[in-house]
Amino acid sequence: MSTVGSTSSIFGSGSSTAQNGGQVANSSNGVISPTDFYKLIAAQLANQDPNNATDTNQMVQSMMSISSYQAVQTQTTAINSLTMNTTASNLLGKQVNITVPSTATSESANVSGTVTDAHFYSNGATITVNGTEYSMGYVTSIANPTTTPTNNSSGN
Picture 1 (cartoon, rainbow, N blue to C red):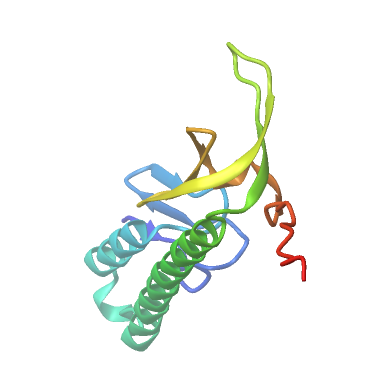
Picture 2: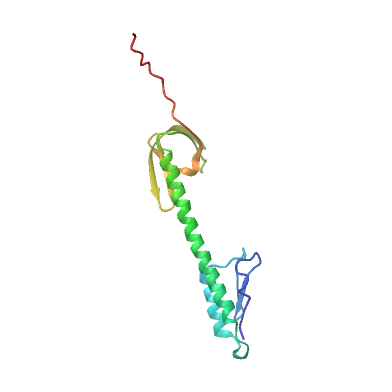
């Protein structure tokens, strides 16, 4: 008979383990994905002892926890994207310093200039400085642009 490990600690720090026909699925960080959780529920229902059925209230609570977790993750992603887009928009016309990390083919580079454009993508925002597009993560400092005072005296 196959058994399924406890589903009550899906958000815990221990490891969740499901045994099915000698195969073991184990998540290394102790948090299983919603898809894996639903697979565990299905396996548990398919393999439960009819004389000792699983508590359906506990299963429904666990499913509600997963749904709530998914909703919070979706909201967090949306808020992070909105924050990044707002920050990029607020940098238009500002002086920035950018440090581009080194790669296998180039050394790291420091760039300074005025932000002239902002672009918004599903995975984040970028800004354009000196005609080149950079990730927001490369910005190391921000300053208001320096202006040269003008002499508006009328000579009276």
